[in-house]
Image (cartoon, rainbow, N blue to C red; front, side):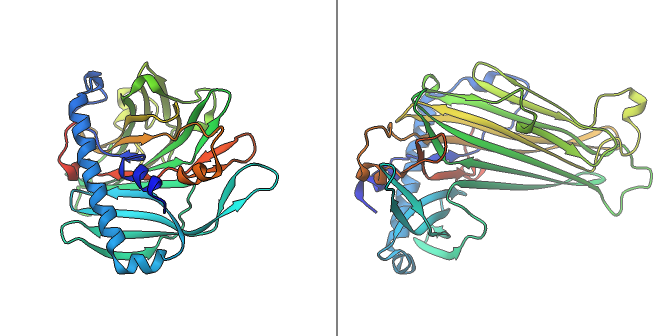
Length: 363
């Protein structure tokens, strides 16, 4: 890998997924106020972690044997805390020169996952990642909770897709998707009279945080394929979403609202409930931006006790420069390939996932 691309990685030319606070973000806009100094300190701390992880990665004998003489590019990095990191790399791909168009396409290669222990400065594991593609970065967070009478599982899965260059708007656009899965089960020792239990609400909140003037979030309100919700209850869920000046909110209610007597009936809330939501990030070239993503599942038992599980990420990435007029060497350095169909270029920027609770950060 050339030195310029390494500098891009080290300088956090990436997407970073980290957590945000769980103290009532769906009730107030207070968290929209950003402490820039605090965010910059977080970025500095992440940069130090990245530099340490890259150093351990490059000094490991197993890694050197694997990448020896091959093209390689980081696709995903999960920072669990200050001492443990998982890195995903695409290794062994080739640049295919196109005859009909000026540029390259990246073909072949495999995705490998590396477990890195920063405390002991070692690579703990090296394995080929199954069902991973370089065009899709996938992050999964699984949470479990014990209620008084119920057992709750909440799963959130977020995907980030390769950026596309739109020459008319002179912006990079990135599609993102979040899927929420809720499962509520009665415990084996629950009383026979337990009723009114199941999944109650899903909340999704996206908030612009940093460098807001150079990017924005959007969704397609008229396309039902972009937001879906389903469950195993006897009524269809209701899904609402709205776009404010600096945020997107999506709320899924299981089931539809009804009378008080209807609500307290057993199984009125489904034991399994799911939703899928797609949004877009539009960003000017060569910009570092930040937005927050939070998913919350509310469950209920005995028609009165509610529980919640929350999944939080903070998303940061630096968009590449405009690809128009780039030399072939520059396209390689920035991980840019010639596009397909309507798009002229695609950008393969690495993704970083930060588990914020492991970092001990606030909002």
